[in-house]
Image (tube, each protein chain N blue to C red):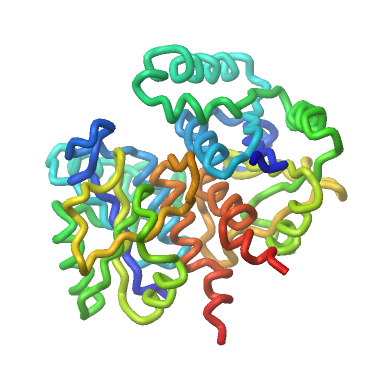
Length: 190
Length: 190
């Protein structure tokens, strides 16, 4: 059964290593890794957000190769995973699309490595069982702080420690497993 | 504190999509993603196994860029993570090196998406608290079955379900988080 959770991979607005707000470039492996992750965890939508038209066209070409081109024959598993992918101009568009699909306003959760006072995974798991969720991941050096709002809390980082520089692919995998993996389900038993 | 766990990323012997045993090509992002993951989870060694000399030279060039070249200035976090990386000719060489470092024979755990009767994560966590561990991940379509032996058990797949096609990067992230993440530590409390 599909989970009422969508993931968003944001290429704008994100930070670069200087802390400036930029549009990051799409990474081919992010398209596949997060689509396969979404499919494996029964997630209904994977929104890839970039306002850059050329980048949107690049994603469309890649997806077309795996869905309709030689890739569909070469690797049908990749093809199947891409069904959940939607390219969007902005986080707001992604949120609106997801709201239309689930029929109610989703809870938006922002993720990042620098928000130690964010919502705990336990709390997020409880909320995810009650509300449709939109889980937002940043590329580059993380989501722009301007995305934060009182009704858009941060989730705590995956690791508290001196070194916490996971790629967005691996961080998203860990977050989804904590929220939806077998251990997460077990912990929701009465 | 460094954990007595090492990870191995195997490029030979692995399966291709037809089930033949092959040497897969090194993926640049695997080098970084797994090194950053290892560093984040305090893992002492990340062994990248390939017997192909040109592939070993390619890894050496990439590492040199990030450790000694322009990359070291551009992104010191990547540079730091690569400290734990060692390129090896074979799984046996990786195991011997790790045994030399920890002073005893490590428990070798193989990972894959097709071994539902493998060791549970609970059991693996318990063992990891008692023995040095060598966690082996396959590229391509997974580890060659010939790597299996009675004293080299499989770990159960991350997900039991119809679709279970995670990239090795995201699967490794989930496995390490289950074995070493905060929830794993909490579950070891009496």
